[in-house]
Image 1: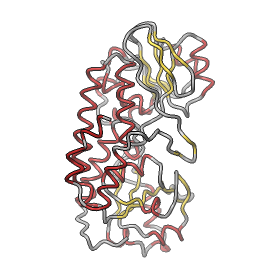
Image 2: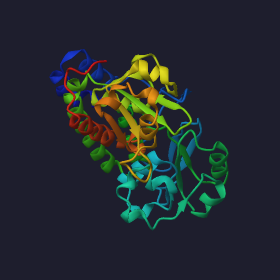
Image 3: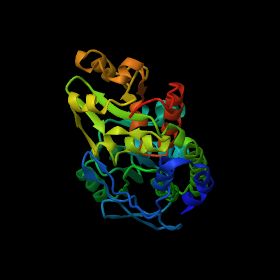
Image 4: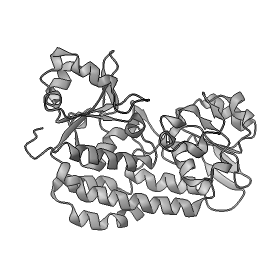
Length: 340
């Protein structure tokens, strides 16, 4: 696998068991995308189709879509699709965007040339057909009835699961490059991701002593992210220990005060509000509860507020998220004295 070669030099530089385990996870080329999100297994990301038209594309829902010609009216229907389409294709080929493209996707930071695009609030047949797309890209959680209705109307729809690991980047970027007929741009994007992943891997072991818990609480109960989640992969890329995964937790699941106090992580990673990335409602809940006053992260000031669009990145933006998190963790100045 290409990612294996790209990370070869980083492997030699990695020190310690955690560094080796991290790199093993990054280059496990035979592992399929079968992770769990909220306990639901994901299908694998489809393989990139061969060049040429008509182009047959195997969708993640088991259906085959046929592109008669190069698509020129593309409609990305979720945040991961928005990230990849707007990174690879010219704006002139995109006919519409979901409203959340400007909050949960990369366009939150780079909205300018995309602001004039028509938007849609929900994934519904009638509204999407108004935009006259010749290719719709969605994920497995979006309404199957809408996907079916679009196909019945003659619109090719390709269902693509989000990225859940660094290995998935190889497959999904190649797939989008083929679908959009932007293979050269996809090759450049993939090379950039490999280079940056190698740099992250080379530095990961120096953060291996730091335990982190991803935590959200809107006042109705706490939730965390265990193994086999995008958040867990994010922590792994940075070299951090996900203490929820270490405790045997998998997927996104509730966490009560007793478990939170028992885990007592060095750092608590909190999602920010959508419109103010410096503020987290979850932080207010933590600080307002006297029962949690003994938590090290509260006493030491090691709460990290992080944008939700990065915590749940299902595209190459996962690499951006890892780089930003690495900088935020390094800025805390946590030495080897931190406990687990």
